[in-house]
Image (cartoon, rainbow, N blue to C red; front, side):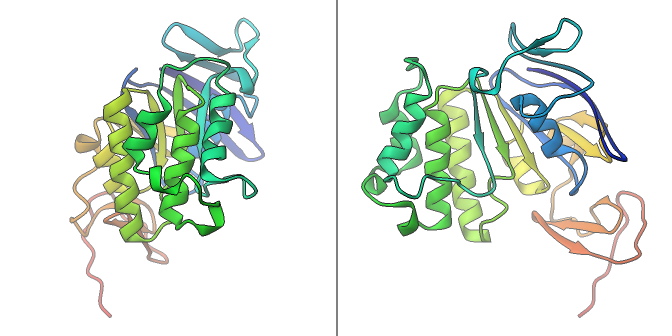
Length: 258
């Protein structure tokens, strides 16, 4: 997977370039407003860029140099958002079937395998309103997988869940990754998610790539209290604590008192 995107949004300028593994997870990591979701929009074909190249393997989806731009519906990209966005009038089974209909007859990823890996067989006859937040996200993952994507985009898919459900759904994302060897582009500001799921990590800040490498090399274990990823923000086990007025270098140790 290769991505290059240069895009101006008012006073904000996005300028990113990176390459990720063809059968692993690339993490886009950074604070809110860093440009993570803006990058995903270019990859998905949902936003235009002044200069862009998006390629999955030898399949070029966007190349502004040649004028190539594959429409979003033909990119074979599955997307999972913070909120599950399930169709409320459809059962879980019908939501999954909708994903299959978008696949255009391709069936590389078997429905039975996805249902089993995500442990959603007991949910098939239920309506989205009767599901927990974690269950809805598992169904959303299944629907995206059954669209037979060449790439799976995940835009902070766990951020709306409580800690218990977040850990639970993270294990299912990891199981999908191991079972189907599908390239993923995963947006998060959680150190725990990045270290657990990522094979390659791209650090973003203010629309720029500040570093690339393995999550283990770039992101110290979240048990280190002094982990400051952006001014005014401390990450502790995937959570954020705002410290007004703080502008300290990475690695600065903090002492918090009640």
